Length: 76
Image 1 (cartoon, rainbow, N blue to C red):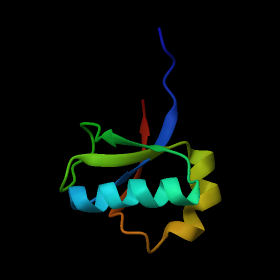
Image 2: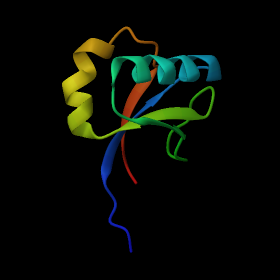
Image 3: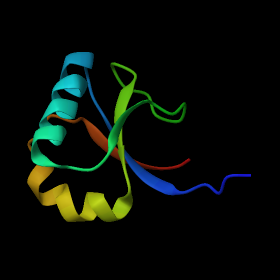
């Protein structure tokens, strides 16, 4: 059985914002990946960016204006 881990999931108001975020992260080398939102998070488009909490801590100050709606800790 796989052990659950903590992640930070960023949610977006639209699919276009989520896709733009994915492109921006790839260009800047920001770790993470685009995922369907977990059921405990409700957002406009149903997509989110998942990253480990330690990466969130390292990048958070550079991401504040980046276009996501909320950052939510989840266990997956």
